[in-house]
Length: 176
Image 1 (cartoon, one colour):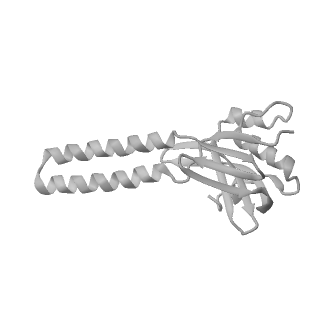
Image 2 (cartoon, rainbow, N blue to C red):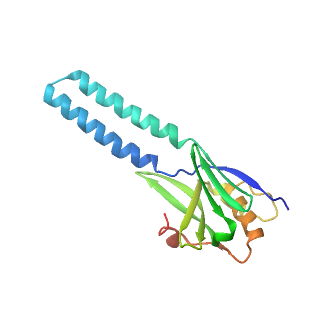
Image 3 (cartoon, rainbow, N blue to C red):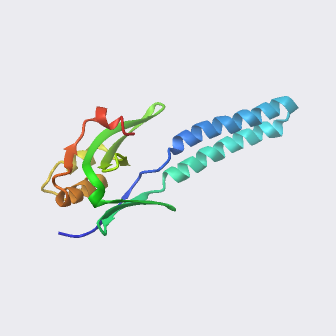
């Protein structure tokens, strides 16, 4: 049995889709208002360029992956410069679940690792998943390629009394 594991996940501490939406609307509204007030075509073009720049930056940052690892008796999450740790001794419950994230007409299946600690805090780490990866993760005889399931199984070996397994999506929605 190994004493450490490290996986790459597509989890972000903030929602870049919301930043894109509200930032884009705000900047576009301000520049369009200024362009209408001054009758300037240049400001109107600048508003469209800034809108595309905001959406481009959002796509860039949403493509950056974080790292979730377990070593030194703690769970560590690192995303760019943001780091957090949860000591294994503070964990009261570990579970996982699958939910659908909607962004307009598009949807993405995500799998979530949910951790409850003694201070009442609930931590959630999630990653994109497709149906094929999900089906293959249920087979216990093969090596799992789903990072969240690998971390969950690693933690379940070390904390078997705190591992609760799969949680239905209705109860996961409260934590997200």
